[in-house]
Length: 174
Picture (cartoon, helix red, strand yellow):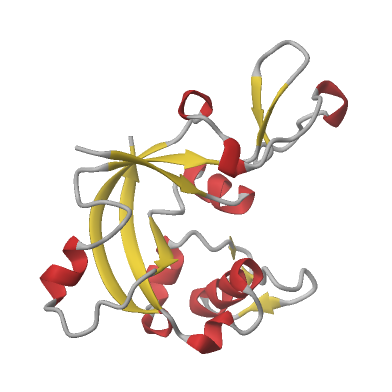
């Protein structure tokens, strides 16, 4: 079993903590076309089923020396010196460990409605609509549309239309 770090934004950390996020998509760094699916899956940079990922998130030490996380609501800004970017989070400060349960390669736009929900998009239960991550004054009518706005916010406005090959990493929290 190998263990690797993986970056998550504050909304996605909250989704993991709430049990809504059990999957993530990451752009492949190299072209694997022409290989059989099993060989492509074996090349996943994030690991294989049974391997673990530890989440890196924006964090800080408060004046008492305790670790606090930006994803947690209610952190008093006056109680911390400065926020540290997720990329600089050491393993000992991580509070989330994930076990990989599946990996595959697919085109970004092939995401299904069920997979978009597993990506942790926020649903407004009272209206059966989903959060738009691009515009707080709009809502989305499907989880897939919501995920599209999340992807564009993280990766840039034209990134969805580029339809890159992505690693689909399924996981469970341990």
